[in-house]
Structures are given as C-alpha cells and as structure tokens.
Length: 368
Image (cartoon, rainbow, N blue to C red; front, side, top):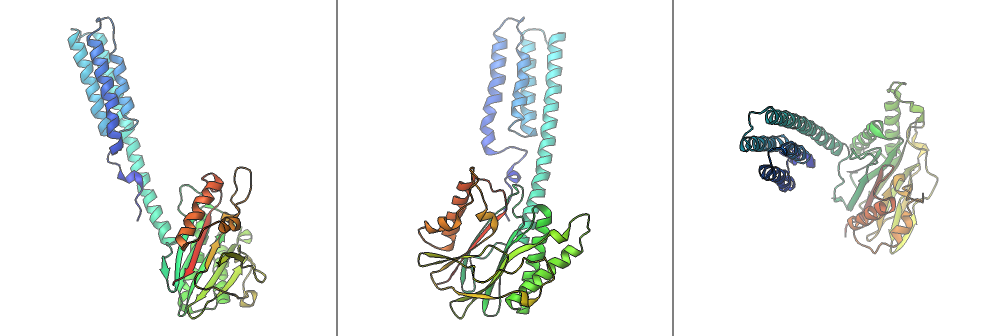
C-alpha cells in the first residue's frame, strides 16, 4: 500500500526542514549580540519573537518549543547584561515572549495532530479505493496489460470510471466503463458494476449475459436508493465488455454506449465501431437480445486501446478536445506500458496538468 507523504513526518519535521533551523537560530544570535552592544535605552529583545514564529512555519511543536525556549533564554541574558532583569520593562518582555512562544507551540501542536489524523484518513481511503479498483496485472492469460487512471477529484485516486479483468475457461474477459456523475455516488456505482462483473466470471456467462447481469445490478442498486438522494431515472453507465480468446487471434466485444476501442495493427489505426452500440447499462431492464457480440481480429503485435470519454473530451486552454487518434499515430511503437506512458504525458501536456473529468486508459497486447 502506498503511504501518504504526510505520514513520513515525525513531529511535523522533515530532513529538509532541519536546515531551516539556521534561520531562527541566526535571528536569536543576531538580536542578542546587537542588543548587548547597543545602549541600554535601545531595546531589540521584542524581535526575538520572530524566531519561534518562523520556526512554526516549517518545524513541529517540539522544534518550535525549543527555539522559543532559546529566545526566552536570550531575552534573560540581555536583561541580566544590562542590569535590568528585575525592571518592569524586561519582565514584561520576558513574560510576553513566554506567552507568545507557548501559543505558537500550541497552535503548531494542534496543526500537527490534525495533519496526522488527516493522513491516516487519506491512507485508509487510498487503501479502500485500491481494493475497489485493483490495479490490472501486467500479464493475465495470453495478454500483457498496462493501465492509467486519472481522477478529476484531486483528493481521490478513483472516480466514476472503472476497469477490471478476469480469467474465464478459455479467454480473458475485460470491462471498461464510465458511470454518469462524479463524487462518492459515482464511486459507489462503479463498485456495484465491478462487483457484478467479477461475481459473474465463475458463471461462464456469454458477453450479452454479462451485460444483462451488470445492467440488472445497476437497476437494482438505483431502485433501492432513496428518491431524495438520487433520481435513478437519470443514471446510467457506458461500458465495453471484451473476450480475448486464447485459441485464436479473435476477440469479441459488446459495446453499451461507450467510446469504441482503437486497434493498432501494423502502423494503422482502426476504430472498432462496427455495428450499432447497445444502450448504456441501467437505462432499462436489459435482455440478452438487446446486446450483439461484434468480433474482430486481434493478433500478435497488435495493440488494443480502451478508453473512457474523459480522455477524448479532455480540453486544452482553447477548448480543443484531446485528439487521441492523432496522438496514437505519432507514437513510435513499443509495449503497452510505453504507450500508456506516452499518452499519460501527452494528455497532461494537452490539459495543462489537470483533467476536468475522470479518465481511464487500458492498453492490451497478446503475449509473444
């Protein structure tokens, strides 16, 4: 499991922040030496409060408290040197420095505690999301696979897009889909669909049977959500379900209103939009006759690119959509992972580093 960077902090301090302690220590030293060499009528001690205040911006509560104590010690030395430690002026400066240092340290402690809790919550969320959308294996059956997921929500690892792969008796079965909407509701719908897809693997259903099973699962899920939470009549999922057979260069596909896959074959790019796509899942109670299996050749050396509409509908600053087909045409070739890396960098370059909708890409190839 990946660990959030915040969890690597100890008391809010990192290795890079240790070097910054030179700044508050230099302030304490400079103020002390300057005050000791100036007439008693010039009071520079109040500037010492800058040391713990600056420390709190990069160090933890412990480091802030230590610097605050050093600042108070420096103020005491200054007062004793000028023979006025018991004067009201120096006592007021010392007390004020103690109070403010204590407040700064307390606020830093509260901030560190909040960050630790937030880091723990995020780590649990990341773990839960990775369980829901398990990374696709690099190799399954006769296939090599590479995948990419970009979530529109910066605080999330996944959203309403989904993909999964399972083995059947003589084929590898894959699904890629896109749930209407964003946020937690979309993640919940994606969880239902992936669960239905995985749960049906052992039943050895046909591709239309899989589509019916997933569509029925979505309809059941939405019908059991309160009307004040979701109008299920406006909910749907687009998806492509694939069977890549082991015993020949043939694959079967059922497209439920999803963007068609792209096939790279000997330098040429073909859009697999054969036939009429079926309606998206969840719009109506499905029947197997509503779904037609389209077959196509998928040979050694070919690459099959599955994607969601978040890829082709990603816009740049001028509002232009991402030209996936054109960008595939300039790719110099390689394995699925190199293509995914190419598309990842190119897509972020096109959008300026931020995607406005969840985007997923899966690239598969037959093993040599």
